[in-house]
Length: 289
Image 1 (tube, helix red, strand yellow):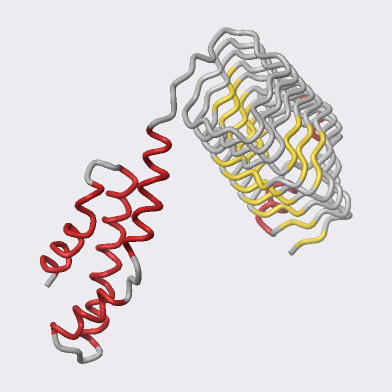
Image 2 (cartoon, one colour):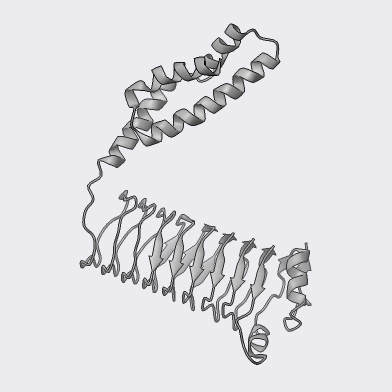
């Protein structure tokens, strides 16, 4: 019967052969149909009845296929415009769709990417000071040696975004859920964070001196050898968060970490125990959850 289901789908999907997104949909749908068929058989239905009910359960698949195919073809027709090493100051890219694009060694000062879908795009060695990424989809984007000083990220989509040896000094992060983001050797001094959730984020060797994370939520976050002098987590929620101090031949790292504020923060037992083990931070006003 699995062969019969597969044969049925081959006929339905035949007009869209070669489109990757459609092939992925076909694979997922076949798995769902097989599961549905076995459920109906377990309920006592005979093979033919179970097959007919399984096919009926997917509804008007042809309309869905047409929509997916049109979108896929539209993306494939995108012209690969050369955006490398050119002056794009104050350029208006609001609302554009650019997947896996490249802005390498380009001047993007003040450029407007508001609401743009930039999935998988690279901004390597570009100057994006004061660029506007409000509402932009930055999933799988890469910022390597990129100047993002004073850039704005209001309601941006930051998923698996990778930032390496870049400056985000003075950048503004508002109403964002950062998911599996990696920040390495990045300057985040004077950056502002409001109504943000950090989920699976890694801060590795970052400069977070004076950063205020007050009231933010941290889940599964790592602060690995990052400078947190005078940083504040006042009123923040921390779950499964780890702090690995920068290497020092003396006790300087511990003395620096002593300046971090956790007043009125709420944290799980594991995070609390790890911080308590460092002996230097004041946890007297922390709530254990």
